[in-house]
Length: 135
Image 1 (spheres, rainbow, N blue to C red):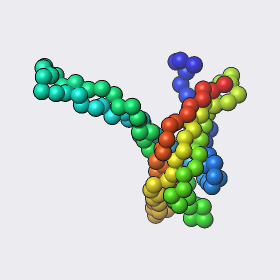
Image 2 (image 1 turned 90 degrees about the vertical axis):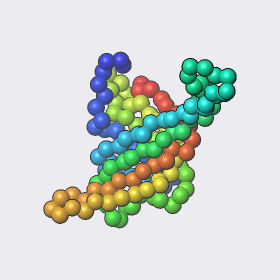
Image 3 (image 1 turned 45 degrees about the vertical axis):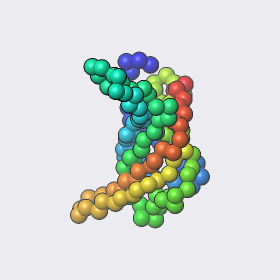
Image 4 (image 1 turned 120 degrees about the horizontal axis):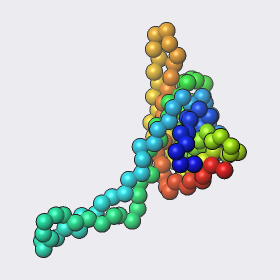
């Protein structure tokens, strides 16, 4: 699907254990990071040397929502399977997915005068992210 712009409308986030579900307006992933291990030693010349670490950090997912005080994000500390499904590209049946074990580490609320109440929560990715292509 190279060269095809994906539209965010239609994407979903599903919690496998708590079944937490609200109206999501935006989500963003901080990205995955792999440590760079410094292998420089006293005999190294010209530039420091590095090798990649074996383990990566899955990062965090920030989610913006229409806040419902009767349906607060589950911040119990329990890990659960979280699945992000992207919008279905034209001509296909299923959107691409990213699935991982995670847990909510932070929540927030904004309650402005004469505007909608919104909320946010941050999910910590607790293990490897498994991806499936749109089909």
